[in-house]
Amino acid sequence: MISIRSTLIAGGAPAGTVKSDAIPFRPDAVVSLPEAGGVLAAALLLLAAFYGLAWYARRAGWLGRWMGGRATSSNDARKLAVLERLVVSRKTVLYRIRDGEQEYLLVESSASAGLTASERQA
Image (cartoon, one colour):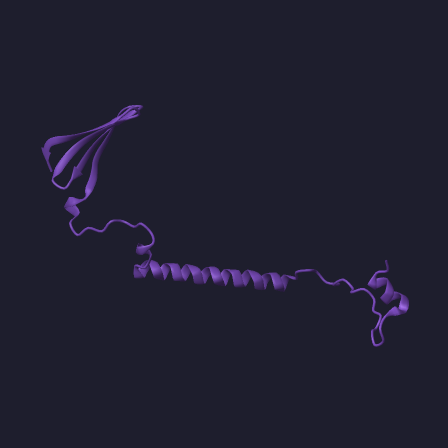
């Protein structure tokens, strides 16, 4: 079986075709310094544009829809707050917690946890 390439090289090429040498390799470097600098500048420009858009979206409040943010409450007295934390042992911690006007004691250990309402009012 005769290949097309050998037929073309041997002179069996159709009329009007020109025999050419192989394509020469590129004599300079594959990536020059100005080309690499341009790519880096474009990447930095895109990064700055993305950062600016994210900053503006955060300031405008658009990110609150997609990301879990802090719960906003008009009444700060109703918020849950940890007043004190006392380490009883290596595996046991006692917390004093306030929820509005009521205080609780929470005991957390490696085995269990318990919650008790305190008699003291805030």
